[in-house]
Figure (spheres, rainbow, N blue to C red):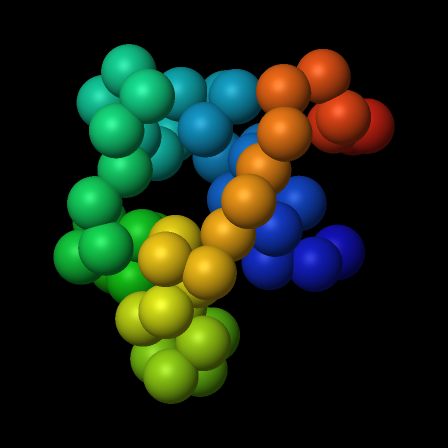
Length: 55
């Protein structure tokens, strides 16, 4: 499962984010086993479109 899909699952399940806001620090702490170079820039490089998520 990609980091993008795991991120969306965490937000949908209410495990990550406060409403629609997810901070960089919160994101990095939630995925501690992923490369920090990847998680550190994930949010700024993301474009996630509404209605295009398949669980």
